[in-house]
Amino acid sequence: MDGKMKNIVVLVSGGGTNLQALIDSQSRGEIKGGRISCVISSKEGAYALERAAKADIPTVVIPRKDYANSKAYSEAILAELDRQKADLVVLAGFMTILDECVTKAYPYRIINVHPALIPSFCGEGFYGLKVHEKALEYGVKVSGATVHFVNEQADAGAIILQSPVAVKNDDTPETLQRRIMENAEWKILPKAVSLFCEDRIEIKDGKAYVSEEG
Picture (cartoon, rainbow, N blue to C red):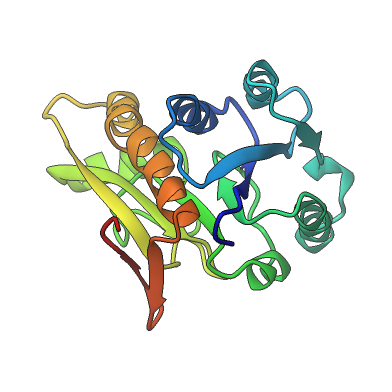
């Protein structure tokens, strides 16, 4: 892989705020060793597609509703990833759980950002505002975001980066969600992407270790 720009394929389903954070980082030259080569959406008309178009990034729509089940859909996604010669796959608000045929084909090459400090408030059913509702219900003083590799289990892959965010007394799920996005997700997701593309993430015993520069 050395010397060659890695192909980053981003999977989206909706507004694409995390995609925008990646595009912005890329345009500032912060993603080293790779570039966003394609955006794949599980929905037609997702605003993320417009964001990609504005940045001159090719897009592909593979509608989830056209497939009978998760396995058939995952096989279609896998075929497209292969076609795009993806080196790294980023799930950015991608609302479909991928079958293990994808994770097995791309081990330690699929990353996701989760809006909590894993292992807290994660796993099946923890997505969107639910994550922040549960954090506030529990009364935690710190939450944050986690970028991790995706494996066969929900939110259980090796952790690459985490960033803490303080919880305020008057937070609502919406205010906490916003603060975590702005102060954590939009910073550590592009950072993790760059680390991957710079070959600075090493896997040992199922854990991810980030090496210092040079």
